[in-house]
Every structure is written in structure tokens, then in C-alpha cells.
Length: 136
Image (cartoon, rainbow, N blue to C red):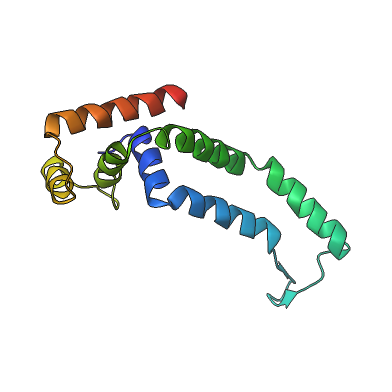
């Protein structure tokens, strides 16, 4: 079972964090009001520019959005300091929802021309995970 740090890193690597941020932003920016019959209406009870400004202010105060942006910023800083082979190890380990096994990671690295033992790849993976846990 994955722990919280694994889930956060996996979401970042697979682009789900960016998708969550985009979904929250679009929820605030493209809000459609429905009347009591369930019919979409353009009238929100305020003037259009005022409503847009209020929506943007609500979006900037959203705690979930602030947390996701902070996570994206911190993980981006840690991930971009890795070398190409280290990035490849992290990407393969977190690919999809369950990630590849260590033997599959070793096979993929070997087919990409990166000669690295599984033990070294595990050390890189664990060091990155510990760095993320320390920062978050």
C-alpha cells in the first residue's frame, strides 16, 4: 500500500497535480449559475466584472489550491535538480498508478542504455523520497 509521500510524488510525475490545479481554477473561472428549475442562466446576482473579480478572489483564498501549488513548486524544485538517469528512475518507479517493479525498472534502464544496478537505483529512489518527505 502506498503511503502519502508516494501518492504525492506519483501525482506529480503523472501530471495529476497539474490537472487538479487546472480543475479547481476552471471551477472558479467558468462557474455557471443555475436557477431553481435547473436551467443554466447567465445571471449570478452581481455584475459580470464584479462577479469575475469575486471568483478570482475566492480562487486565491482556496486552501486546497494553495496547497497544490505549493506542492507543485516544491516538488518541481527537487525533481529538476536530478540528473537525467535519476529522473528516469523516479519516472519509471512511479509510472501509472502502481509503478513498475524494480526488475522492470532495471530492464527499462538497460534498454535505454543506462547501466545501473538495482541497488543503486533503489538508493536514488529512497534518497529522493526522503528529500520530499523532509520538504513537505
